Length: 165
Image 1 (cartoon, rainbow, N blue to C red):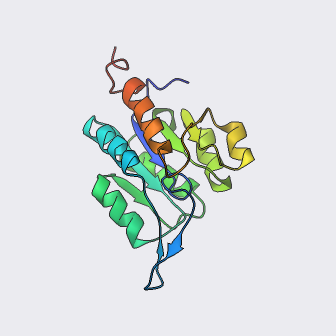
Image 2 (cartoon, rainbow, N blue to C red):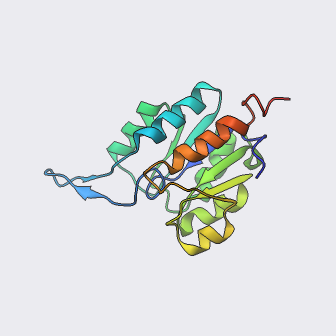
């Protein structure tokens, strides 16, 4: 797959940045596990000039906190239909879909996966997503899948040493 024009990575949360499980804490709030290695990969991309975005159907404080901690520049939450935020993201970032990579794992992600230059998913994604994605990670969602794609972009993207002509 061609990564040399990629300047932005767009992420889904549940099933991609997490393993799809949510659990309830003692206050009755739903919580998610995030992968530290994914975070390192995301931060490294940002430090190297890439833009990062999260488009999620969920709306929770912990996702906002995770996005803020990692320095992810764009967050769209509560997005049942991901197309309007994706269109807005293009305006806000000044980047075109041909300059973006997207990782998603469910039906809602299909329009975005079909629009971007580099579409990735996780091994446990729904069949329809696996069928249309250019890349399926070796690592599972919530356990290094995001890091795997970050590393590919870091090595071959627009701001990598091999991406620069």
